[in-house]
Image (cartoon, rainbow over all chains, first blue to last red; front, side):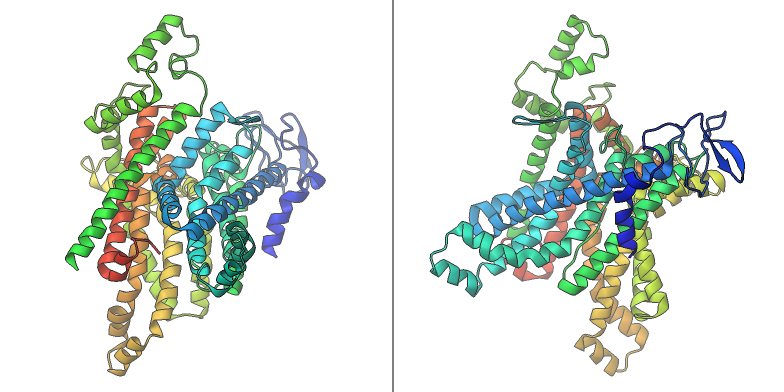
Length: 293
Length: 324
């Protein structure tokens, strides 16, 4: 339930909000306890939570509504988390299938590649890639991605977590390829590609389903960390990570700026983790997946 | 067994060297190939003159082919002569300056997280199913879900700035004042440890519960050993193995730059913060140095864990040295 609420909230952001996440209300006033109050006072101190429909959780230094920004920022955080984990799954499945099915040299090479990715400090690799791309953008053939595009953190996070999926997948494939149904398929004269995708891959869905919620959790947390260090989501886009970063800068005068996005992040991650635990118990009580950030 | 293990260890060490080499090439590529434009122009500042750019280009040998630049950078790295593009400071010196701070953070935090995880895991397993156990599990999940940089900022604000119990940030040399050193590190230690306490205590609890059902534990009980001896000598001793493995991997990762966020939030000026600053400035020599330093610790601890496993379990040595 909590999971559903947390996940759904950012999705209806555009319907309930009275303003946009970028709109300033520097000189506006709202009613608090029946008295009109400045959204941002003369000293530049933003209003705290009003617990009413406008500025429910208060405003930030530019007079922007925190609740509205939270919902829109959450949309970015969740979008990145989900798309990045789908990317990880796509790459990880492919790589794990290749390595596990072909063994030999391919396997050795893939394993070594995974070792290399694993040898990087996760955050350091993410920050390095994020900073490099944020300046130069990304060009893949005719496709050009701007430095401030959300696609960049998505690609980075997908790649960083590939070993987490590719290794267990490879292990499963190694075991599966010796099973009778694969031999039967081979005896029928099926090609390798069909065996891999039609026979072996469906058997990996359990492994993937177990990993997916935790991959999303990892991706959301890494996105927040990257954005916090300025190497993830770039302005004018917001995410919970960038909001925490902004909040921490002003934590002394307006602690609600840091607390609100952090609390949202914790609630979301927590509900996803509980959900993941449930999936794991149903499908695969033995699997071991870890969260790192 | 000696020669088999030695061969296994040698193989792991060779592959470790290759991994480190690949890491250095990748980092160099990330910072040389991806961000278009001329690094000499970037370094020359906002309004560079043509001659300034030329001078910088010659000084840093940007006019050489990329692989020559790579070779020069690596050579300087190994001879300790690598200097920053930006402030001309020696990279090795900067890393050596930051390392004691990062080590102090990592060692202290890992002691905190091991102590808490063992205590909580043991308690949870003994009380398995009770309300206190469930409460601990919920707390552990919250600990895992909390981003370390947010927790650090909140703790530093409320316990440091508002309540004035701890200093909000900064680092004091141990030699200057051991008491102040400890006082400044308590919040960072706990901040960094929370995540690991959450993970380790759950892993340990699950393992202990499983081990308690084993035959040899029943046998120990049947022999009439006290519950305390059974738990400590028979159960805990076996259940600690996975935790110690995790510890080896995580400790390497924390030393190797995993503490970057904690260092940043608490302004500890360790290697992690140096890394973050250098990346922000596109300071390639510094980034190379820091990443190699980080990757070295991660790879060395991974390798040590593998070798320790192989020493304990001869089967691993035979099938090509895989983890898991």
